[in-house]
Length: 267
Image (cartoon, rainbow, N blue to C red):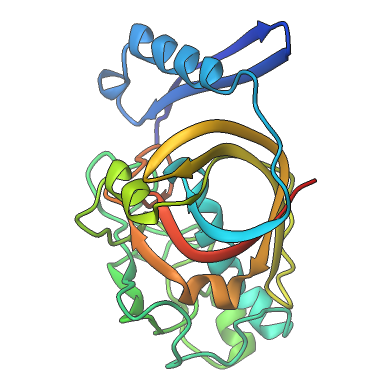
């Protein structure tokens, strides 16, 4: 396999302080990388937009996770349905096969043979042939992700997932990011997260974040130094839309995610 990356990080400063952000491009084929000029402009834009950020008071509101960080929501889902978590009984999705775990419009599936995609693979780490496979249909959990070892422990068949999933695809709505922000109206648009705050046994979710406060469907000002919290069992069921702004730079192919309500812990 091959992988090529161009990465740019920028530091910006005003009299009120400094901010850092960046952008990168990643692809199997170097010819599919964004240009250095495009990456530099996006890195500069994202950094300067964060300058003079404000703090928020504690509240509950709708939240949009930008596509590049929304993948973390689905990474936690895959960990929860992985064989190791299931046979150890260390998962908030234990014994949830054929049950509703996402909003009823959510479809999540593997597409291991997408040409040029970063998660594509003809076989898993044990040499088992990969195949297209549904994991969530109409919000309902269809099965686990299993290596041969975890499958034997559970008395099930392996699913060609030794080493993980391959191009986990979350089907999108017709809405782009701007439309998601307009539909949210008033709430929080998260563009960066800090730390790892997921309890895989209970599903409790709490992470430091930064982003933008939204009113009347438009970005108002940058915000920082707050925590977003909830429980993944509820958050998954409160997904209103998946934007069509899919981030292709990884193994989890999702657009931005609009969640109906979360707790924001600020000042």
